[in-house]
Image (cartoon, rainbow, N blue to C red; front, top):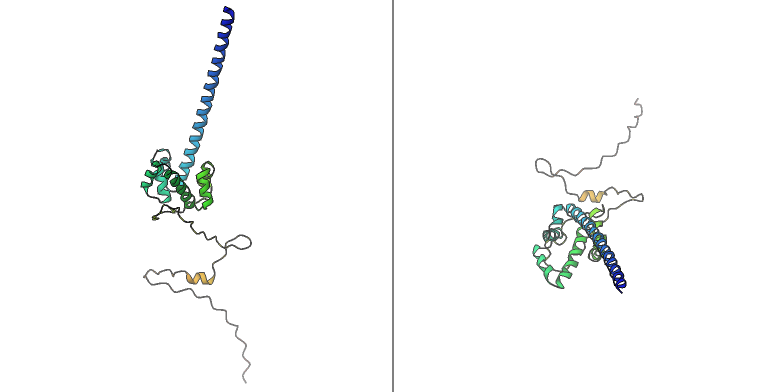
Length: 205
């Protein structure tokens, strides 16, 4: 009877030790993954803020990092108070995601991606050369609605993909460059066609 009791006790102790070791290993792995994800997020946001001409270190300062994000998109700083209101904070996060995408020349669909899968779209905004910061899209907008899409006019190219030279109409519409005296410079006139060579005169008698 005593041997059975001692064997059960030793078995229970062994299982308890293995469970503790597994839990400790899981905690270490979880901590390492958390640190890796945190470092990646800091690098992405640091690069994103620098791309918008903001200090990169703002990405690691709580609360202030959201203030800088509001400055990037042109929303008032007091919007940070809305993030503490339930349900309203979800709508604010959606508007911020849409405005951030449009401030970098992206579409509304990309902004929805900012809201749903930021771990995919934020690195694109931070490191892609096609995502260029064009200024606060919502600056001066007195509305809680997302800012409208900024019209993009793609440059005209020829068949080989090279930009076309400006036409005579576009050149004539450009403002004249002022001269040092403050008077507008005269428009350039096309060169005159070369005159025909002098015909030989008939001999005079």
